[in-house]
Image 1 (cartoon, helix red, strand yellow):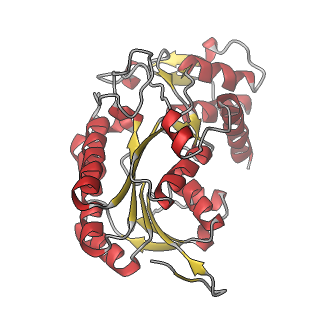
Image 2 (cartoon, one colour):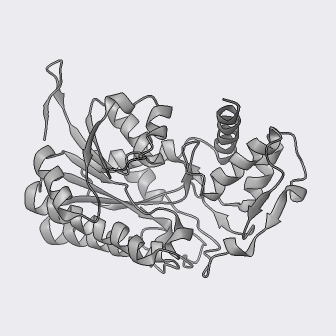
Length: 334
């Protein structure tokens, strides 16, 4: 709960799972700018990477508590000892493709991990606000008549990742309605940045384009080039997370751009940035990268977030991809 910082000012406390990931890093940066004391909840690993936190120059400004989303005792201890004003549950097995290979682990982390945190908050810190990182993958192959997905659209997940996230989302809503907890769910559509993991298609492409530009790679192996996504900038999306949670709005919000781009658009913009107009000779299709059940189309209607959060995306898809390519070129050169 609220306590004083070193200057005697009242300071909120936040606990962030997945703090070393893309969203966790950007969110922590935002919280620090708003004078929060930020705890990162991370697994104790020998080779723990803090690269994203170092990229944003915030590593030495954070506090860490060690635990695991599948270990209720470590979660209970963290909640009891910290008593955070806000908990942001961003930790997950987040790569959809891997969820087909590790469906049980994905469900334990993404589904039961959320339940473990909600139980801990209910029992030890019911005043805490809880943010659940829901996802557009919950919609799967379902959209409304005007080809948008919104808060009222039914979920029809098409991956173990999506089904686990539906469980987590519905559990969060149930704890809000059953126990009166302060719970918000952000149904975020795809969001990217230079901090995105290399296993995700946007970063896989921008990293490869940077290496092709520098003569270190000859082609990119990809799966379905016709998939279309609503891609936004992660740095914009964490602002929506923060706003809905800190203001205790206790509701669910789609966070998206409302614009649609294909993998081919991603390739075109990325290669154009290094002066290559025809990218086709640099692409090889690998059937191994095609999922058992594809989600061909995701496009969000963020009208509710715009109205109630006064939020809308700022950075364009094109500017985001250019930033990612340039960051990868710089990283590889260094």
